Image 1 (cartoon, rainbow, N blue to C red):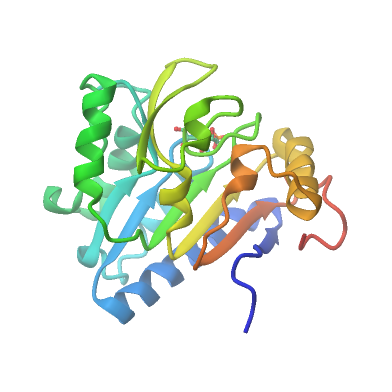
Image 2 (cartoon, helix red, strand yellow):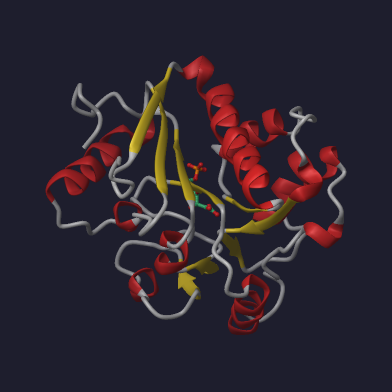
Length: 242
Ligand code: 6PG
């Protein structure tokens, strides 16, 4: 049987990255729904997923009413703030699909961070997450787990308050063990600005030590899929599987 702790890597031409990502995400959501009736989907913030969410919003044949929406991280801002990860997803995915509020479980960034963090621990409960979408920042962060921040190596709590080097500084994030307990983790990376950092991640994946937060994402009993575009993958070895 395939070693599920090793990533599968799919590199797409820049003009096909969005549709390839939407296909991969939709396939996994559908297979989880087929297997257990509902899917706990975790959304990423940042610019990369936005067009992918727009593409997903056109997949009306997917059983969206069986999806519960969570977030991997949120900035300490209210739900209508331009920096809100929830707001971005609401605008391009949740509202276009007409998702019921009963299936939307956002991180309440408008509350004091420690309170919002505790509330999200309760919201998540104990069931593992099915499909987790992540991005990679130019510094190798993922969700809001930043290099050098002690919260990025928290191994007990399921949700953490973190510090971002760029504003908004206060963030709330799923912890590494929560990400690594997921059934499917999909890391979305596009653009030439990410190429050098991605090459560093690949060296860490192949030879260790895994220091960058995104390199520590390694589901214990699930699938890890990296979806890249040509530009992001430009500095990787020709054989991209580490
Ligand atoms: C956020 C994130 C973060 C993001 C990366 C990549 O809230 O900003 O969830 O981890 O995925 O910073 O962001 P871009 O896609 O904008 O490069």
